[in-house]
Image (cartoon, rainbow, N blue to C red; front, side, top):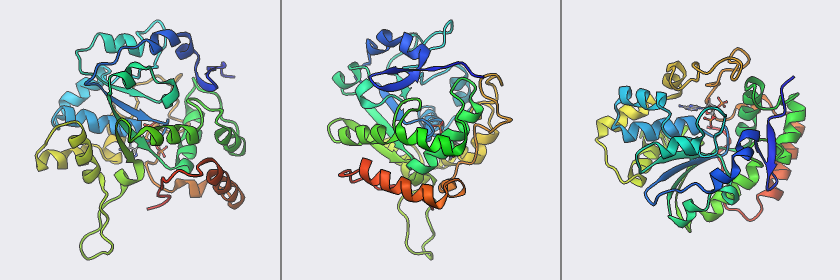
Length: 302
Ligand code: A3P
């Protein structure tokens, strides 16, 4: 069996070592020009991180690979002693920082709000997120065993998973987005490929369009050729074969990729292969209740 690895802070389950390190995390001193990549787990964190990295390195793949080895973009709540914590890693890096977090708004270190940092939030539809999280917990040996799909369905809805409820996380970040510098992106928009002029209707969102939004948000401008290269290099297929992004360097006692690969499917609509009709109806009803009054629309299939 696996050891119990999650503990609560303010009703949210987090990794035990994170909770042990909680005062260091809360006292973290973000700087005004910092960029924070924010996601609920399994929403495309690795993907957006690679995009941001490629933008920072002007499309230089070799520099990105080095950057990942050096663990740039630390997770602010990351802790696994005796290795340096996310906070310690950040503090050894030159500013301004690009950092990552899965924390819900109410648990974010206050300095991020005080310094009006930039927040890049990526949201993914709840059903695909649940499916992805289920397979991740099967293969991730330092997270609780998810049990059966039926059991996990209940666990996910109740929010008793690492980093808390999907509903509360997405709602929290959506509600503050107009008061702070937030670029709110959707996994599904990043996946969507524009149809050609002959195929109506013309979609406006596609990876390039979403990447261009990130470039602008970061206050940069890149040549068209660099943008095209970033689109290519951050495709699911490329990232699945890249040892720097597919986590194949992480030991099997942490991530057992023989159970489920870290780069699993990377699609929109895989929930249809998991949800029964009854589960789907029940989920839709719960979704309506929990997301009532929130004008946020998720694409459920492409
Ligand atoms: P699936 O399990 O549905 O395949 P995170 O990085 O937040 O943990 O999210 C992981 C999810 O993002 C996985 O979803 C993974 O396959 C998907 N993903 C990673 N890189 C991707 C990419 N370049 N394009 C599309 N999806 C990607």
